[in-house]
View 1 (cartoon, rainbow, N blue to C red):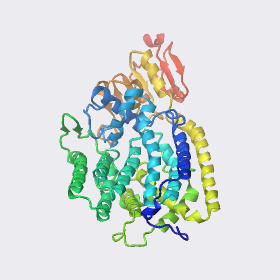
View 2: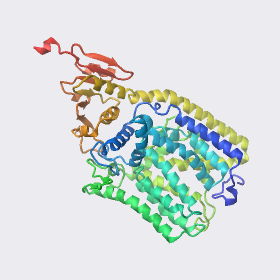
View 3: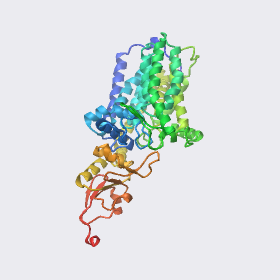
View 4: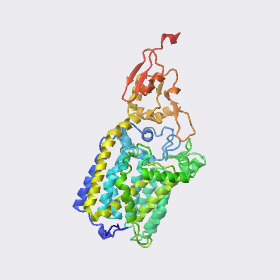
Length: 539
């Protein structure tokens, strides 16, 4: 590097072998990154987000019964709440962990943890392929301490599988320039992205419209036609079921059931039709662009599962400064069509992600495909200062101090808030109530989103028992259960013969307790079991 700019590409001679010093630094970064992702894994965050409970329970149900909770056999897209949960790949990948560890937070979050850990060395290799070892070390350092990446590695949300999978596919695509045999592998992984999260439906085709011809144009050894056709064939074969899924649900056609899998007709309105501007007018381009701008500036959307407001995606300052510096420093100085410049893939990546943000209602977890690229550009900006090592070290120490502050907050105050918000003792309370009474059980809906799925999860119930579910809003995007089996949800909807209540302590006044009723206290919830009726009521 010369002056204050970073080359858009690095000659192959600069991709020298890793030195012992580089390997030691890389190992230390990985150790720190792994430690903060593994520490108290499964217990922090406490409680369950409804989406991770839904994904884990459906995977458990498919593993043991061959159907998910709505009765569909091995669906390519999980019907979930009725609108579809697109992260089916995470569900199927979690099955070995569910078989080993049963239906537990550790099993449900294991896939994201492993992909989060694998992303660290992969991120180094990817950045090194674009620039050099120095910039790659900065990049993996930033990813290892990124609050967003740490948190997404610890939750079991389906959307969190998409970024590392896309990163892997793109790294393989870069390698295919010299090793054409990897091209079909890369396109296979891109095809699997469609089953990682629905945002891939737009991002992957947009990105490949540029990236695939570009890599073919600049291939060092000419890629055989049969390899090109094989790659495209595999990709379109993997994309076809998703296209059929969209067609079936838009035009309300019948499900396609095969001996191996099902492409389901959803019982409710598909989420992709209300989350984007393409259907039914639920979104507007102007509103989405404004929301995207606010999200990029604030790096917080109110979802406590994605970031902490005081730290953002990767710490506000100095990240914003070096992000813009990195973008400016890597602007290609030659015609990208005439000379191969791998940084072009990053620009295509960011462009595809920004276009995604314009056509849908944004949130950090929906825009997660963007942040990998932004962290790479931030590393490129920080790399500009390599001629001033003392300044670089001051900035790195600042990042370390911010990381320490984030870790203390995340495992302290934030962890306690999450446990309270998600009623971390719900599983214990509903299990206790189910074991102590034989009749109807009334379950609170305060702090419990989708309490029906939390009940299925906690009790590891046979999905066939869910067949008699009654929904309050059967055609809406997220159907809310009023009851199934002997479980009723919402204090106001409980039958007179309820034998046990699972509720928050401040809701106790809302129920009429009988003589002999007993209250059992958990940390956040209480269980009230009914006793004998008062004599006055018996007359």
